[in-house]
Every structure is written in C-alpha cells, then in structure tokens.
Length: 200
Length: 374
Image (cartoon, rainbow over all chains, first blue to last red; front, side, top):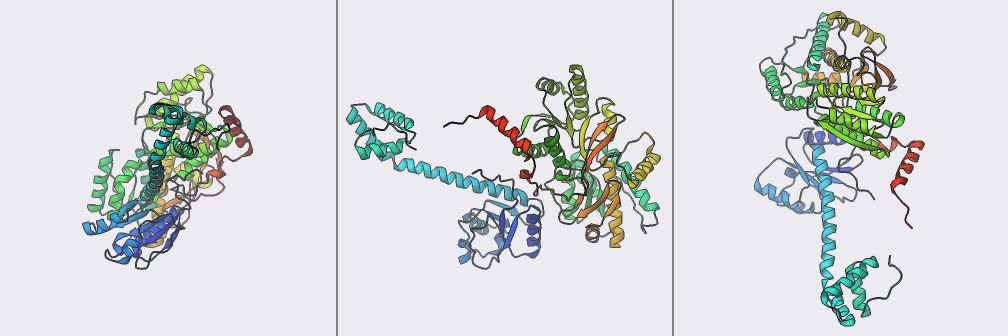
C-alpha cells in the first residue's frame, strides 16, 4: 500500500470541535475548498467515536482545563489546535494532547492548509516511529535468546564467540530470516537447524 | 514591462467606465508605482488606504507583491483585485483573483503535452515560487501518467547566462521542454535555444504558461515562433467583444501596440468592479463582494464571473501556438468557462494519462529495467 501524500487532502475527513460561529464558518469554507469531508462536534459534549476521522480541528479555548473532557481527547487522530489564550496553564493542557499542528486566532483563510499538511505529515511520522520503536524493542527482548544460541553453537561446534555469532548471522541471511528468529530455533532444537529449503 | 501594460489597461477601463452612461458614478484613480520593489507594496497600499481612503485596489503582478498587500487589505477590510495568473494555494476573502488558477493554465497544458507530444519532459524555470509550484504540478501529473521529468534546471531571477542549459538540451534532445522562466531569462533562453536548434537542424517542442504577445516582440520574430502556450486570453480570440476591444486599445495606444493576458485581465478587473458597484448600489466592500459573486460579464476573453466559493474567476482555458507576426494561433479552447480550483483539490490524476497506448508505453518502459524474478 502506498501511503497518502500529506499534500493531498481531498476526501480526508475532518472533525470540527469548535463553538465560535465566525471561526466555524472560516474553517468550514476552507475545508470545503480543499474537498474534505466535514463533521462537527460540540466541545462541551463527550468526545465521539472517531474511527472515521482523519484530523480533528479543536478550539483549545472551548474546553475547560479542569474537566473530565480535557483528557478524553488524548490518543486520537492528529489534532490541529486553535489557540487564543497563550497562558502557560492552557498551553500545558494543550501539550498533553500532543497537537500535531496549530493555528493562532483570529483565523483567516491562509494557514489552514499548512496546518493540515503538517498534521498529516507528523501523524504519519508518529506511526512510522512507533513501528520502528517496536522493532527495536523486539530485538532488545530477544537479546537473551541470541546470547543463549551463541553459547549453544560455541559448545556444539567448538567455536569462539565471534565465529559462533558470524555463523548464526550468515545462516540467518542464507535462510532469509532474522538472527533473532534463527536463535530461537537453535535454542529450541539444541543446535543449528538442518534446513535445505528456504523459509518464507 | 508588464506593470506598464497593466496600468495602460486599467486607465483605459476607467476612462470607459467614466464616459459610459451605463454607470452613474465615476472612478477616481490613485496611481502608485512600487516599481517591483517587494517591500514598497506594503507602504504604497498602506498610504492608499490611510491617506486616499481607497476601498478597492487593482494590481500586483508577482506573488511576492500580493503577499505584501494581503495582510493590509484583510486588516482594513478592503478588496484587492488581482489580475495576474498565479500558482494557486491561496484564497483570501479580501482578494478577487481575476487571473487564472493552476487548473486553468498549467493543467490543460500538461494534459496536451501528455496526449500529443510526450510523457517525458525537460523543465527549465526561474528560481522562485511560480516555477517551484508549477514544476511540482507537472511532476505530479507526468509521473502519475508514467512519464518522467528528465531534468529541472533553474536560473536566478533576471539571469541571462543560459548557454549551459541550451547545451544540455541540444545534447540530450528531450521530446519536450517546459519553460517557466520569466522576463529576460526566458527571452535569452528562447533566442539561444532557437539558434542552437536551427544550427543542428533540431526541432524541440517548447511549452509555456506565461508567454504573451508583447514578449514575442521582445524575443524576436523567428525565435519566438512555435511555442505552445496556455492562457485564458490571446489577442487573436475571435469574437465581436474582443475585436472591438482590440480596436479600442490600438486606437488609444497605437497600431503597433500589442495586448497581453495581463493587460486584458486588468481591464476585466476594473469592469468586474464597476459592474459589482453598479449592482450593489455602493462601493462598500462587503456589498461589492456579494454583488460580484456569480455576476456574469461577457468580456473580451468570453464570459467571466466570480466564484464565491473561493473568490477566483470562472475563465476559459485556451492553448495556442506562437506564430510569425508576434501573434498566437489558438488551436484549442475549453467548451465552457472552467470553475477555478486554486488548491487543485479536484485534480483527478487517474483521469489524466490513462489512455490505452499510454499504459502500453509505461509497460514497455518498465520492462527495460525490471525483470520478473521467480
């Protein structure tokens, strides 16, 4: 699957969580020009289910800081924060939401496209980084298994540690698998698996 | 040069409005010439608004100058009537965009190139926003149709040392050259490429979405011929409105003078403004903006009206080939005025370049460097 370009916003779905009618009309007009689908939600109500939403345009001033609602917006699609009040207390609340981008009020037609592109791009980067982190964590978790496999090969083949590891790595490459996966097999079998066929 | 042409056109339109009994008001023009110095546009417009109490400003050719003016007209709730075509991605409530949006100039030209010339193109342009964005659009359309950008060569503004680019083109013989150079750079490039191509007996199609009649004269009669050009206006448009307009222009500015899309578009700005004031019964900005929306004007370039969705204009895209005598021969025009799409949000890449032969081309091209591995 090719990932969508952050520059093409047509057909993406925006949820407007705003109260000010003038600002709503500016954002709605601009989203329409960009060919996006729009839904609206009253900020004083519980956040809705957001599976079918690609970006949230959230008026940061419309939700009381000390309320249940304040935390309920976390961990959702990328948020574009509309900022009026620049007090540290409000900004601290905002940082907790990890906004993907922001616009400073009063709103004008210029700026929203930039905010959307930055939001889509940073959301994609977050997903990529999370996947990368998960791969790294997997490798750290399997370090103990790799160590056990190296010891096994050293014992069975009478090799030094460096040579045992090189042997595992080369075999893994030949079998088109990872060092971690091969190590798990070595530990399970008590030695190098005898495979002629290539694993998928 | 273009600024002078636009001023001449604005003054002609103002005189026509003032002399016409169809308008029960007269325009009092206040002229300012920032001389292309970007920072001076802010000062000039500020003075026009504060000192002369001007409600409507007609002008700005470059995007850099327009971006200087927009914050002032937004803050003071005035209207800027902008005649020049531009690269899009803007939509201010306080600007009426009378020049073509990218779907009305770049897209038809790239589509023509893909359908009739080549999927592979050599791009050269001036190093600023017009070229950057136009080239991005070209790249997006061309690559989605299976074509290639063979090169992208940029020159600094006003640079006339073009020989390295001409040499590369003559050596590589691309099937098409897309020229987004502006001003002297473009004239120098077209002369040099014409000379080199003639010497080597080559004929390389060139495309432009900014070339206009007065420029053909500056480039010279032989080097300016044969460029495929996209524009919403050419002096050669057939039709009573345009023939009368051209005759009035030549009567005023001399038989040797030439029209251009930017001059025409400035004239259209003043006329759209006058007609909106007449319709609104006032020069008040809000009333004029509302009155201008969807109010059709049968202009020398055909029907024009403001799309209230984005304050850009419905215009008729046209393609022409520059011909001997510093004129354009129009060979295609859209069947009807096209809705402006400044953000290209309705550009359907899948619909461009999906013709059968093209997909075959793509397959053949791919087969050169991809092997099937079993």
